[in-house]
Image (cartoon, rainbow, N blue to C red; front, side, top):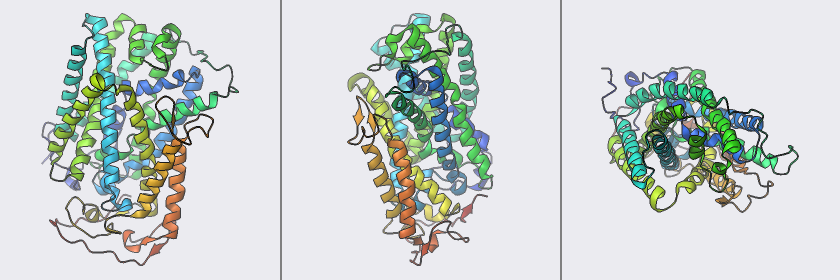
Length: 511
């Protein structure tokens, strides 16, 4: 029987049955693009201007970071159709049945951080626009009300689940895109593509750190989707061609050029007409945008805040609830979503009104992404060496409180993948350079450039392949065609035992 949009989704992280996997790659595109087609992405688009680049230099840095990030993210969409479950559960194959909690908590922290950023940025824009348009006072009570209503709407959508979230994003993608395009007309008279920035030439010693830093900030946006991209793609049939699934994830990120360029272009106008709003020590992009916007565009700005923020918030919080129930299996998906949603709302209010965490949360999100990137490398290389072959029943051992199976390794831990992630993430953090927020012990080695992401990615790729070569995994974890690029060992694979046993699923190969 076909599931209605208004039916509450009951699935957790168990394998989605074939008859319910009716989503298309286009649906994945809508969710991934809709989740990033917001003010939060516009804010990331302002960083090239904040760092002193010209408009064209900022556009080049944006394109570099966006394409690199989209290429890194695209393979992460394959695990959902292959295994019918979330990416954190799929990571059991490479980090072990117990080691998969790494992916769960990375997804949990990332989602809470971006849910908070979404509510804050959209709530601020909504109140600011209402103040200019209707004279609504910009008071603590007004902001609190906006945050509460907005977060509550997001929570309701997430409780209903995937189908309802997909409906919201179908509307959001078209509506927010149209409003951003309308913004091109609103700011066309003030926009100057010849905006020169602050660097006299590329020979300036601070130019390349600023350029690379801008590109890496843009790259972090696609990477932020890596941990929970499978939450949505698991509803795509396993037989869907891999190129179509990866293409949907890739193009969804390329499409975010729209909000990125909106942020870049309007930031260049703000820098010219209202530079105080882009003070590097306390930037206020939303306030600057409202200051330069024509009166007739205030209502579209409020709509962008409402629609785009709702889209980002739902894609973030949905993944949070799903991953929480996958680790604490006594919770259903709905119970986990409500619990984490309420906890996140408390965090949002505390950070905005009492603990002054609003600025620090952006740094927190950046550090999470720095740790997530090496985990993604382990997953992608693991997929390649396994030829895309997985045993869905063995992936569910943790959730069913059983033991053994192909991915049990050493007491549920695969030290090869775990060591790769731990070492690479730790070294990447050492190279982090976020002035005024967090600078690692090695953060100044690259002349002020934050090279944490490239270091983490490169080290993870090399270290994981070396460990797989020197310490081969059991032959039993690979499919009938054997491994690709690496050797195997004759180590025994323990049978699955204990816990509630369900009907075994067939190993899936996407082809």
